[in-house]
Length: 408
Image 1 (cartoon, one colour):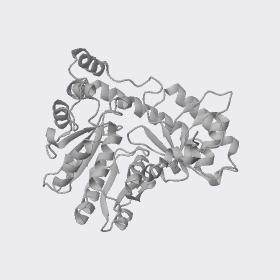
Image 2: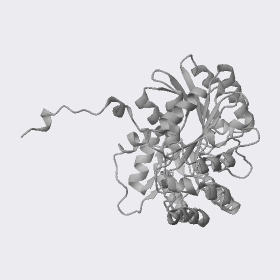
Image 3: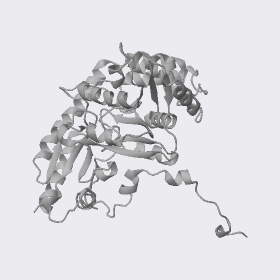
Image 4: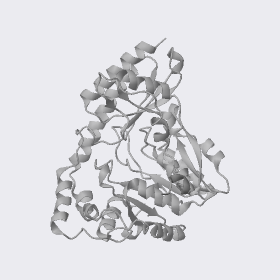
């Protein structure tokens, strides 16, 4: 009988390079929740967890009708059903950045779309520029491909705008693309048109394409507006990424897309590469794709308005309650569903950083927050602000009690 020691089967080097920074940190937290307090998670960016955010019923009916028609259960084209791609193009094209179905590739969620975009633009040995703090999946997708990640700073003092000078200092002959996330996870920030134009000038000067992660597009609060960066340029090629997950509150439906904005045919070869890469998974969920025309174009406007208002009210509550807690500094969010809070460790007697704060908070109060070291930004924590109001209030009261106990 053979033993395991006689088999020399190893994990591939690519798989060993696939690291999720969130899992790397969270899985190493050393404490369990308080046994006598129910867990309240402010960590997972899934708006469906508590049941207070739901997709509009018209979207469900659109999907059910496709099931009952028995016309969308087979394989579709790897790039997506044409009716779905056409619906996406009509929804997200603008007067200054028009789209056709041929400019759309449908993927398995926005993360699948990001994998296509990164894989089509960057080669082993090249580098991509990523936001810090920024969504950790960019690094996870780049690592197995041996693409170097370089991180440009976002400034909390300027509502998390890009430090343009720092970004410029990272560019060299091996830079393949700049990735932005607008509105931002984890920051909850929304870039102004003026700031986007500033970035576009840099990318035009250095001949760099932009991958714009816009999965939270239009999820903005009063006084702010979302502008697709592709609508502001006729020269810089932009690959925009979007999907149903956040705006329509259905992350489990796994339908995202790549939008190719290339009015000067600079990305002709990249477009072919995106199509080739899309063939690796034989396409995304065809039933949801078939329902996209109805979902994107017939969902009542009140659904979007009410969703944004509900998140904004939670943001206002969060800012009000957390701002009065000693040792914390809230950076006001402008959109998406997140808030970054600074941990002023010099005001605590026995908490040295964001990881220890998160760890002790879990053990003492059963409240889960993400240490921002997950986003390469220590001494902050990210909060998800989509739980029901009563759960947020309870969580923040526990955080307040915790901070008072540990404050100097």
